[in-house]
Image 1 (cartoon, one colour):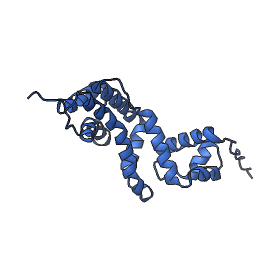
Image 2 (cartoon, one colour; image 1 turned 90 degrees about the vertical axis):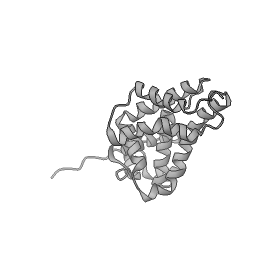
Image 3 (cartoon, rainbow, N blue to C red; image 1 turned 60 degrees about the horizontal axis):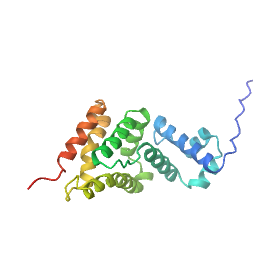
Image 4 (cartoon, one colour; image 1 turned 60 degrees about the vertical axis):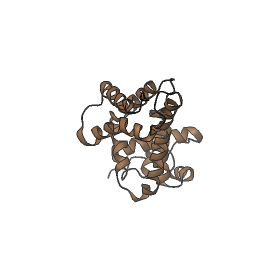
Length: 196
């Protein structure tokens, strides 16, 4: 008769250390197992904490997943302020292309389009908040006179970033620096002030 292997007791992590460990475990599980495999129990085991600690802090799996995605994407995609709209957009979309070029980034993008009733009601506001962070770069460009006053910030961000998502989700074509430069320049060409 074989004796079962002992299960290591959860670590006594608290506060910010516990939060970081849980969010990192959630992102890893989302990347490797998808939404279905990212249960509160699995995250707690991977992070080495008690499941009750996770529920106490986040309340639901939905809150945990959204916090993990928000933290991961916001840290991977800082919004630069170089003083020039082109440089800001290049830096932002280079960061996005680097993220989407990783298995983790691909998994997170796929998760964002995966249907799940538990996240459906929060997905719209979640992506709106991420987009709003990027819009400030375009608005600053309009204020500095680099872009036409009637520039639609959302459309410009979508025009530059949309092809990156298409390449990841549909074509699998590479995401390189030359592509990012071309996409940013194409989007900006349509938004520059016109001589009258």
